[in-house]
Amino acid sequence: MNSTYALHEMLEVHEIAAFKTVCMTKCKTMQALVTDPELKQILQQDAILSQQQLQELGGVLSKATV
Image 1 (cartoon, one colour):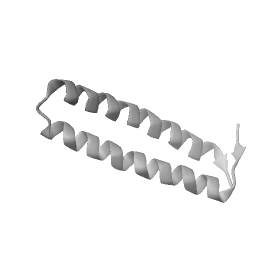
Image 2 (cartoon, helix red, strand yellow; image 1 turned 90 degrees about the horizontal axis):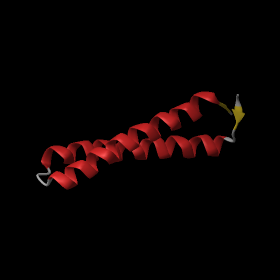
Image 3 (cartoon, one colour; image 1 turned 90 degrees about the vertical axis):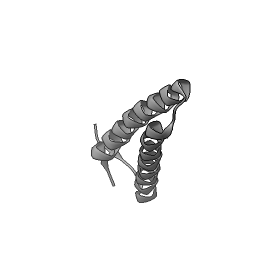
């Protein structure tokens, strides 16, 4: 199923994907610095969720036409 989006909508999806990528990078970096096991687990869960969200955004972008 192809979905047609306006250019500004595609740019917003790209912007969200870029932001999520930065967040995931920071989260993975902080995991190495954190000593608290509970916080480390929260960061790990956040990294996994961010990766899933980025895959979803990639799917939206690959199926969309402008």
